[in-house]
Image (cartoon, rainbow, N blue to C red; front, side, top):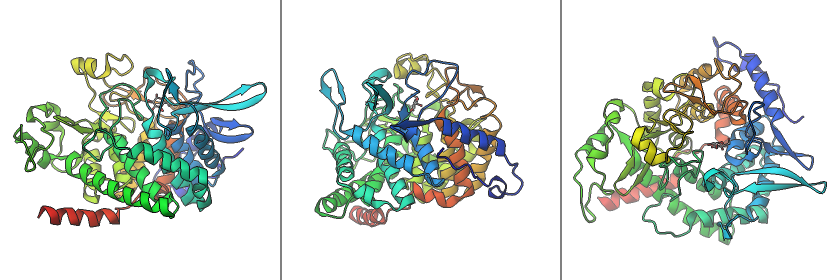
Length: 486
Ligand code: GLC
């Protein structure tokens, strides 16, 4: 038994909110049952424990899924499981990641791992995407790993772990993989489709926002974790440069509000050279009709993706919320994103916090973008489904922007259904009223996400574990760029 369930429910709640102690107790018990043990030690949590359907790979510990459980364990004074997870996954980083004799980059972290027994001995086997449906690359795993390592160090003060030679080597391998020179003109990270939480084809290849927000948070984490020796100093310079250019690029080119929409609407195409206003050659006709009505007078958000003549105007939730949490978005933009969520609550939160993206792609667009994926039909799963795990980043963003009432409103909404519906992985429908058609029950990150959201709301100081304030280096750099541009 490693979980401390001693949550002081009554005194932690704001006045007037009913004590949902039964849900909390149930959730803790379920979370405890999901723990994976390896050679007698807790090392992670399984993705789901659904008694009704075949497990497939949901009996594995996914790196991205474990993050919400891990933060919760850290908060509750149970860091050993997180430490073990960090050590074991680091060990897997250097293992074979081969498909058809081709080797993936060394720094790659697995999407998931499981414990297997062979001749009475337990072993960990990892999946770097070579077994996953569609053979997708788990780019986000190494980014979450860095974010989690920082959270562990912040909670425990155990900087020695991060400074161990194997950890320093692991950090450098990730950085080498992420910062390698490629055929790219932007500071954003170029990834294939399905490289993150959306791990199926959905037209999210190129420079999707979620990866950029995690990339930014991961680079900031690495900067804090590298030993200040010669190698560390060289990397610190590279990191400062990349963080500033990445931040500038996202704020300058991904931001969308009514004013920006008006600018794009009147963009000229085919501009050549340095003075081009429409740098990416976005054609006004590509602005989707829904957006011209949906964009509120006040409020805005970061676009889902940007490339040559391509702006993905969909709202991607985790990318936007993590941009707030990591301060990739400016303070003003962060407030605007929360304004938009409040004003478009019915679309984005509906009956279950919260939509993974909005709106869904339908008809021909669905055929082209998903390759006719029956799991990603409109308003289901990744294509506009509602994912309760997004409750914790929503709570974090609400808390960080001084909008706690939005966090509580979402939690209350979730509490009406999560336990009754047996903690589903996702919900379907325009407003998230239906339990997802192929959704797992007893999904661990749904359970942990709910508990973590409550913790963030009742103890705002926990935000420090995984959030960042505005980067002072960035402010200096912005001033320099503005001066240069006159
Ligand atoms: C689905 C989700 C993915 C998650 C996995 C395990 O594939 O799309 O984000 O990590 O399930 O829960």
